[in-house]
Image (cartoon, rainbow, N blue to C red; front, side, top):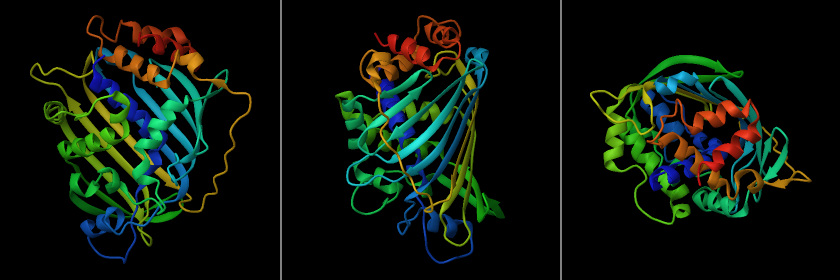
Length: 346
């Protein structure tokens, strides 16, 4: 597996553990126009989303050999609070993943200092070095001031949302919101993600430099046929309540895909926030846990390495390779899946 792929996967694990941080919000006076609404939601004067209930739905409908396993889905659901004093965000989320028509369930919990994973046969403690890497990556968002916004990590939706239009008012979980629709400038979005992923995962790789090289960014951006975003922000408080992105892509004219066997497809991502700044988050470290290293054969990074090795292997495409064998052989058991994929890293 290439070093950049390993680094991106590690950083994505960081993002998964702090998905709520994508809910940077804004406050200010009401005003007309989509651009002003976006400024109030994501601009410099953004207020803080300190707590809430997070619901994330991700679905990839692939084309090519990867499509033999059907859609790839992931849902996350649970309460969260923003990081403080160099700690992780506090959260207690359940997850369900669908791979090759099999469903895998589990959970993730953070006390701010420690992280735990629930698999189908028990609870496991994430290794301390991996947690330390996540905390280091989140340091810009864990100061004394409540969540300073996405710009602290180089993420600025105002850069990559274009042609914005207000689409009227809608209710999201009982809250009156303004819906803004627009296009996504994928090249600029990837630049921002490169900044964020470098901050979150660069130190763990033992090297520096760009995660998404200019060549890779162009390769991915050129494959996009369309990229749309819808944003629902509180009508009165301009707090983000929901965000939905839909991207259609295809690798044409002999362009090589980063993942073996993937020719194109569509990506749908929806993030919803309920009970914003009204949620009380209480978590407790579970008793009688086992080290997650007993499943991953070392650090959680081994599992991420295994995912990268399985997806990028050139010797056998994913449709018939070891990665798919891990999925089908797990028979819906999350522990078995994690154990098998982790072995692919060796």
